[in-house]
Length: 97
Image (cartoon, rainbow, N blue to C red):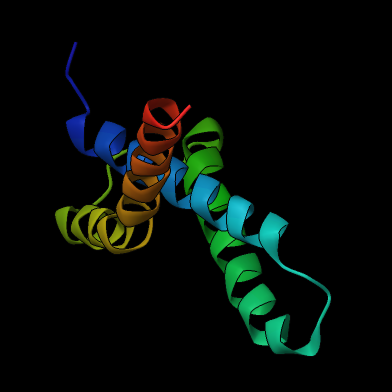
């Protein structure tokens, strides 16, 4: 049995990006300034859903290293700061009651 570590890393990164994009879509208002933002996040959700659902249908079972690095890099720029701010806000609200 082999460990598909690249697949696991890719799926975790895709999951983080998908959660961030869905939360960003949830926070948007129907105002005109969010039209392009909604388009961008909708495309991100569609792409990351494809990455997460691909292995179920036999696609992307052995992703290339460059593809995984790109996905992890995007997760690092896009989802990790969001998680950091959420954790910091949660800790601040606990300490200030």
